[in-house]
Image (tube, rainbow, N blue to C red):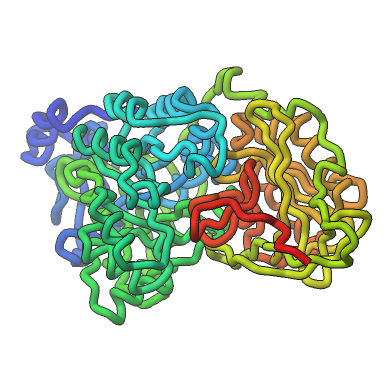
Length: 602
């Protein structure tokens, strides 16, 4: 069986739904004898049957015998829980290193039937046409993938140069597309706080269209800047890391989005605002933000997030509400999604344990999509055009000397600004380390866990290389890791202990059209090819996950012990999250939003 996208509207289905509920027509599908997880009432209701017609719930009650005809498919729930299909409130497909189709294939068996995706990664490479590519692909899927129009391309104008630019005119145009649900995360929070006309213009265009504005306030300051940001219109925020962050957002009328991605573990701290502080959970939603392909295939998706939230002390029904009804209400889709109730899209899964949440049968739009962790339908691959490929344009092959930081004359060591990686969190620390100098260059220092880091411009072939230093990866020996996944402008980002290894890794990515490469002692340890915009593979998710597994092992072989170091690596250039980052224009202090020198002085 082949699954395809699309579902008739409620208006076009209403007559049949009413007829099935009244017993005048048979249902397409009936699930019998389940325990109904009712996210409206907070109850678990045993002995419940569900009847489905035209891809929507027609009847939910104690017996659907009246809806069973000769051609009705009947599934025996056998007392298992009937759980609404899970919703990811904020995520980036590109972080999985796969296409939207492959992402869906990976997460459907985990009970995810709705995603709200912000494709600002591909937007930074290909601009508005790239957003349209992913938008159109999403509409072919057998599950719900709504697209948020990226609003911060580049994320920090003046501090980085992306491959494209998006402004109010592009946002206004996209608001008329059929699958655009709102504006993506407004990462340029200093611009909003300062009243930047472009940022406020994008927000205004979204609100005029009656759609949701995504937030991104990546600062611990809950004083006047936070209040100014809230006044700017964002309806949600996923950058909180503390209980007080969740409280502040909800009090200002935002939804607090708590994320558990491959590298971001922000649920445990913030959910205490609910479990210990008594915060009303109706305005709290769960999301992943960024999920590595290995995480998707091996550990799960929103089912993983819900299980984790339950483990932190949430009632199972409350955790499920945060990943279903709360999300649907936030995006104005309560009558379409987020619950098992008449008229809604027939998205649910069967589970035998509400705390462990095994996902045993997944139904999307009334079709059985997966059983026991395996897809039950074919989801055909999506063909990306040639215009989305060959996007790594260096202009020239890089050399080892390109990765040099000049040292002041006649000194043996200098004080330097160094990016400090914080495990399992997006923020970095601004460190100062004294580094040795040799032959007129500042050197990395393994004894202090300090490596070289550089950004190589790859959109226009300018040959520009900006250099700095980073601490926290633990690399030893002669090694380098290079990636064209470098949030958000996605130049080539390389970290290494050896300039020669750095050059080899960067040039290798230019050969294959983008990806992630690990070099050690003159040989290639791992390579994940990402030919679509330098961000996504055109291979199956399982294949990419295996390659990503080898990548993680190779990084560990180089001495890295960080959890999900790939994600930590990719965010070193994200110049909208404090404290210190590197972009194609140099080192950036994100606390003050201004460039800073690498070398402070002798």
